[in-house]
Length: 589
Image 1 (spheres, one colour):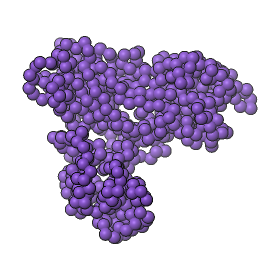
Image 2 (tube, one colour):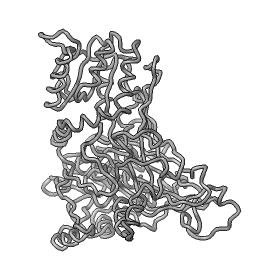
Image 3 (tube, helix red, strand yellow):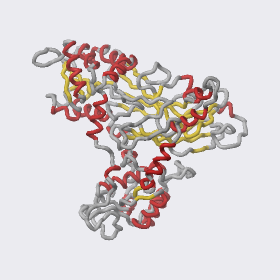
Image 4 (cartoon, rainbow, N blue to C red):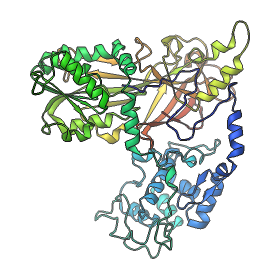
């Protein structure tokens, strides 16, 4: 399952759901943006909102200076003292914003006490959920690190220095008059989600207005209403064109067909639930395979009616007038009990085609996991039961550069270069051919859908990209391509396990692949080609190609419901072990 709008490499996507649309002039330049800048000077002059109050600033430096002088919080001092890398700092900002918005209290003093008594250093913002921007358009998250800043990720966290630095930072808290309650410390000294401090009289009060109302940011900056997003999301699947595209995807549909029809020991006599049934094609397969009951769950009112009509037409529908096995529930799976009679943990097989672009776009997996925990029997089957994300580097052939370099004999490469610059900020969904890959594939993340918990949807993972073995010279790697495989393994599909792959090495699917473009291409060559050379220059350049590329990728559900944020940190490594890091890139899908 994927979104209706497909993004291609020659077109900058127009996110029509955004309240503020990006306007591009016909010739591809940014003239409209410049004109808009002149009209919106007041907005741009206050692009950065204080962590603790409603004050706005034109730069990160002025914001952090305000936080230090007015609120007693030295952000840069905290980063240095606690040795926070980019991701930890990113989480810290979101943690502070969440605590202020929730009107909760936390203090460096309490944190210091936790670290003194605990064996391990665990900050309350360490949780992966704080990788999700608390505000949809928080400019601070993408501007607080200078491009020149170098961070040593492998530097050990010295415990004694940490405690000393915490003491230097002093006490700091976020409070309001009525938020004072029981201590956040447990008996064993471990930190909870630090939300109540028993005595805040001796600490600096940050948010404690005289009118007893916490000063929180303008509500317009908070994520959109989830219900509205859900309505738009399910409404988008009312288009028959989308369902034709998905059903016509033979790789997709035949993988599910084979899993359901060619594993009789699993399906015969089973109770099956199909989450997000659409036209009901998977439910029809299950009924044909001999299931005793099929519950097809569909949140789109139109498609629920369509699925019902199709089931009746194929004589598998079940109601007072029909003796089939298939029932259609017009409901979100989280509210299923309101629409149909079904006992918890009564389902033998849970099937769903939940995957979106980059696997996790649309955030439907959390609904599937809810259905698993609520309806599936202990030991019941979930189809598919595994999912993996993979990554590889792509070369010039996967970009639009070759097209624009020769247009009927004319050089229009300036357009291609501008498009490439744009794509360094926007994820692109497109089909990438195997011949355009310049590295070997690498595993990024694996999910066991039978055992994973919902919070594991957000993750940070590392991977190392090596040049393809056949390379005999340096090639430019322009970025990375992400794809996924889902497995119907022999854990449940004993007679006929199968794999649904969206890889560039296999026939294309409607998911295509997700492309993340580097801010600048990285020259890459096998170590065997570079061995013995005394090369000078920056790693990743023509003068000194990298022999491998190290990636650190974070994927998290965005504050915009059903969207995801992807951060990409890239490090080039030479054959001599020298490293060069590029600034972190943030993509929203």
